[in-house]
Amino acid sequence: MEKDYDAIVVGTGVAGSATAHRLHDAGMRVAVADMERYGGTCVLKGCTPKKIFTGMADIIDSNNRMIGKGGVGPGQHISWKELMDFKNEIVDMYSSARVREYEEAGIDMYHGRAHFVDGSTLAIGGDNIKARYIILATGARPADARIQGMEHLTPSSDFLDLEELPERIIFAGGGFISFEFAHIAARAGVKATILHRSARALKNFEPDLVELLIRASDYAGIRVMTGQEITGIEYNNKTLEITVTTLERTTNKEITHKCDMVVHGMGRIPQIEGLKPEKGNVAVKDGAIEVNEYLQSTSNPRVYAAGDCIKPGAPLTPVASMQGKIVALNILEGNRHRPDNSTVASAVYTIPTLAGVGLSEKDMNDNHEVVFNDMCQWYSVIRTNMEFAASKIIVEKGSGRILGAHMLGPDAENVINLFSLAIRQGMRISDLKDVLYAYPSISYDTRYMLG
Image (cartoon, rainbow, N blue to C red):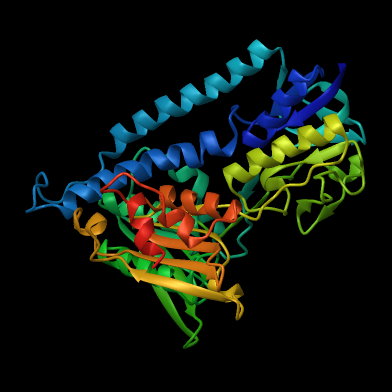
């Protein structure tokens, strides 16, 4: 059956949802499509379930750090099954709410894998959907791992759906997914190991703060091994054991690691498999939908894209949401709006949290300076018996304008937002120091982070 709309949005995550509702509110006839449950990666397998698990891990760790100082019982662990049930309730609630919002708005919904028929038509199941505008918000998937035995990898998106955890898990890759999941697993009583190919883990964060996080990980029983290139994964049907073979890049020696599960944390790539973009005259570059500065396809002006299926912008939920809004505005008003990625804060939800925004130390010049603080003995840290915390603020010499902020410590994911706002508004050190913050609080400590 052939149907006609003003716009069809492929993907129901934050990018697709932001676009669909804005176009509908402007009077367009809009449809959405998804090959999975409605909600996208963030709701189903990303930040929403992840934060439930990291939140519980933090509660467990906070208690265990305080044993002998008021904590309850020694060696507490996450009750995985109970937490999984709780997570599923919340995910189901949010996914159902997404469907209900579309229904109440009068936005038509389709389920199934979409692919281009021509430059203005998508096929979804038995329907051909023709639209004046096609918006791609298809998200991302685990990157292809060219490793012998890669079929034994457990996708990172499946980790938060596991009914039970094995005793030993290796997290392949040293990005934020592996670190976050390893910290969750460790608080559930799992022996967790991170194997990373290059010498530097979490390459988008400040190296000295990452090293401090690695020390905190080791303290939590998580083994982090860098310079380990995985060359093979083998499953033994008799012992039900997995052997991971790595090449240690500094010594060129082969090492074997035993575990019960290997979780894929070696990056994600745009999910455009099966989309047949060539049939829609939609250009693809480096595996992503190629877009111009207005998030419009460089080869088909009917097509826009947002979120993790394009390369501009970090693969973060707020970025995807912002891009979805930009797409809607450009469709409604003409190509006038460009995404602003200059003050995107990001966080790794480990224990403690690692966060950053703005200028990094490696990008500094002679006009910049660093204000560094070892926060380990600050009241906000020692009151919870935390042993690892530091901050690094980058400012412009002379003016004192804040250009970058990086932090490892409790509640860093919230404090970093203050610095994101400060950078965006061009604020100086004195501007933040003059604020009368609630005391005692981590936010109050920003006064001291600034020197």
